[in-house]
Image (cartoon, rainbow, N blue to C red; front, side, top):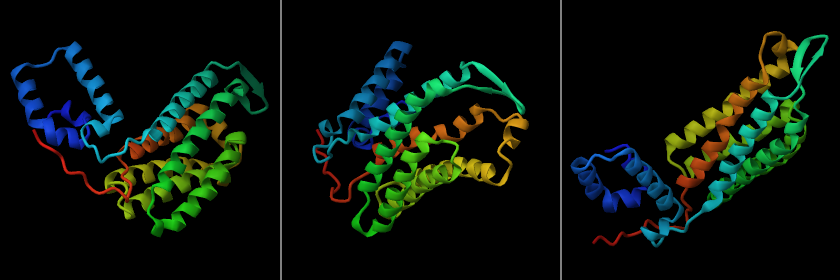
Length: 241
């Protein structure tokens, strides 16, 4: 299957895939055509009801995606913040990054909340875990150095991913990727808990490592919401031309 075709949702591929691949084989796309194909794929995902009338478009994935933009802004502000010095060396005064960081975490919590809401009723325990994690995440956004709050938020994200897989809301591979990725910041916070607070800075670990460990969770939550399927929806019957 063409890599360009994989950009489109499955119902679109089922209906137009063969025709699309035949067209690509007959007329290899230019750079401009590739951009048009990507734009068409984005439109197909934003408006799935045009291909699958029984599918209700869920645009909640835009929340964690917007949060990703704020995380990137937070990282850039931090990198270019003025350098300060203390008894343990230098550090960046990232106080200007507080507002975009609060917004980024808030939008991640919205994404996790939406994914938890899509869980079937029998996954009630995972919803409770998600609620605890989101509450902890709201506090962690204010005090990101509080490792137990960060571990609780990302642990909740991993639990929701597992619940979504067990409830057939997400494919297993995607739930596993989110769960494993959420484990990366958990490992970082654990290291912060067992090591002296200045150990990472003395070892040369910067803010960049922290952001790299957590940043992937935002786009993965967005992707999960794109791929998630509510359990009250029956598979649509496509009307073929």
